Amino acid sequence: MQSQYRTIPAIHRLLELPSLIEAVERLGRPPVMEACRSAVDHLRRLIADGAIDETDVPSAVEALEQDILANLEHATRPAYREVVNATGVLIHTNLGRSPLPVDRASSLGSYLALEFDLTTGRRGQRLAPLRHRIAAICGAEAAVMVNNNAAALLLILSTHALGREVIVSRSQLIEIGGSFRLPDVMAASGCRLIEVGCTNRTHLADFENAIGENTAAILVVHQSNFRIVGFTTEPTTPDLADLVHRHGLPFIVDQGSGCLHDLRRWGLPAEPTVGELLADGADLVCFSGDKLLGGPQAGSIVGRREWVEPLGRHPLYRALRPDKTALTLMDQVLAAHHADRLEEIPLYAMMSASLDSLTRRARRMGGRLRKAGIPVRGCRLRSALGGGTTPEETMPSYGLAIGGGQTLHDLLRESGVPVIGRLEDDEVLLDLRSVQPSQDPILERSVTSAYRGLINRQDDGK
Image (tube, rainbow, N blue to C red; front, side, top):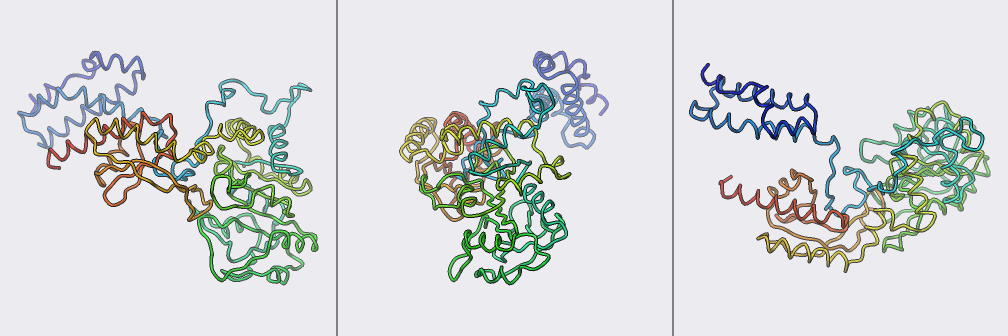
């Protein structure tokens, strides 16, 4: 066995290989040495355990270089890798929700006047330039921005309802992805939840009868990811606003999705916009930045000045405020919304893509894949907006279907740039509405590579 160990090159000899010299120049010496040690230690363990025959050791030694390079490739991948989202879900929570217009955020490469007033030359407020834009776009008197919408609701309740009661309809006691449960957030804020009505029917009188001396607010919450249909009723926003204001209380709406535009423009059912909720009497509206807004993860709070401004003075605000990356990206996204240049926001570019354009892309790509020997067909599909918005509603789309079942599905996910599709009836479906056109060449290469891997496995009898 000792003679087998002696055939394994020393680390310093491996580092003299041209490919590893290049790797050191590109990645630095420490990760390359770590990859060498890992590969050598693995081979030594195989020999010690008798997992490879003596006759196989020379070939294993020859394969060390490729093993090291493979270790390096895996170890130096970005922690959060780019993927091709071919699921057809545009706001995909597990894939980062809405893609960002990052090419427009060039100012992130320099210093920023983040908390510096260029007029006075003194320290400024980091949110001051952006809060006016948020408020103007939404038709609000004031605005505050924090790092996500759960934080926005937590800040509102901690500021205005600490130790007091907040009334919510039972139909809105939601739980959404990541174990966000409304009752838990309310408890963490220090307020007491008062449930009214029934799951399917809540009347204005239910709210009125629950208002007492210790009531701090009425809260309405967007029903994310589900709908209650059939024998249902709930008060209108104006009616609730009138009731709340007669009692001198704030009316809070967690709008959730960040909808600023009439969704019927894209063939989807209408959803109350932030501006409409404010116009109907809401005092505070909070919403996400990375859903229908199409921006970075953030939580915006807009509304009447008397209720918004105390939020920025609350001690909790400093722990929840957004960083310069989110602020800069949000500035770019809000500018596009304000100018109605929605095509500059990737989410809206995908929503606006015509069925004809998707079909043309699929046919071009399908033609090239078939020439490469891949049995692919074009197919009509249905895309979903996702992110808890317009549940059960879909948009017409077009894409590709490839036979290959779970194996091909897995191989696509394991590609250099992973492709995430969906599996139906032993076919992998690739919906092009959620694939940005710039990613088409990447998708084509990944499909080609994955299908070759599938054929190789079949030939090997695996």
